[in-house]
Amino acid sequence: MSRFSAQPSGFPRGVGGILEQLWRLAPSHGWAHLHTDRHPFAGGERHYAAFLEDAERFKVELVASDLSSVP
Figure: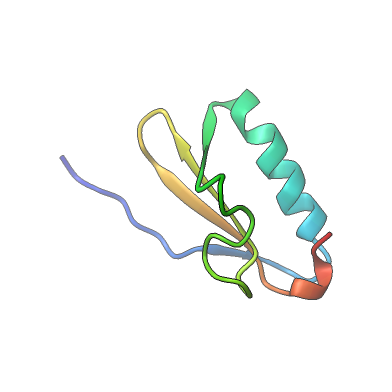
């Protein structure tokens, strides 16, 4: 079985709200939330991100690159 790995995706300035919208909508599109107890700072206190996993166990990390853009 091969594994795919990629670097986190960073969103440009002003899209923290989009990251939260993706987080809210993900389950209705087959993605499970990861680290819900620490969302949105599961990567650290200055790392605003959403961690998701699909049914095939493919994990993604969506990152807001500028904390001034987060809600």
